[in-house]
Amino acid sequence: MVQERTVLYENNEIHYLLEQKPVKNLNLRVHKDCKVYVSANSDIPTEKVDDFVVSKGAYIRSAQRKFREMAQYAPQPKKYVSGETFYLLGRGVRLKVEKNVQDAISSDGIYLHLRVKDTEDFKKKQKMVSRYLERLFRKSIQYSKNMEYLCRHYGFVTWRHGGDLAWGKKGLLH
Image (cartoon, rainbow, N blue to C red; front, side, top):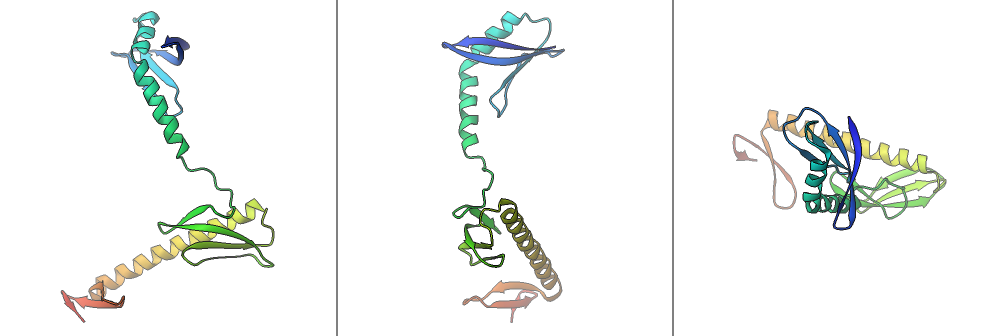
């Protein structure tokens, strides 16, 4: 049996859901949506449960405050407008939406250039960016597989000064 209850803690109400079930202890949980849940044995009077919740008021308020703080940093849904940040292989790039006669998308490492006929067409912009990011992800996986294959068959790979690749076998650089 679940019942909604309210107690007063420092002149503020704490609303919580009380579920009475066969448990050994009083269990208090504050979920990330800031709702408070208590489970207690049905033998424990509700007044005792209320007193328990009031005694944990500081903890409850602290947990709710932390969850509200964390919620403001949660990723917001993308609007696909200029200035938003997208991540290409772990690196943040800014979206630049531009009006163009032909739809195209590219990146120069700093900006993600999205050229579209209609800059207000949310679905089109979302689809183009999603496909582009997915293609890049698939290419990076293929690159990793290719590098793994080459390393397994020809030795290890290291970078020489100046950015050139150097192949080695059994610890010797060529």
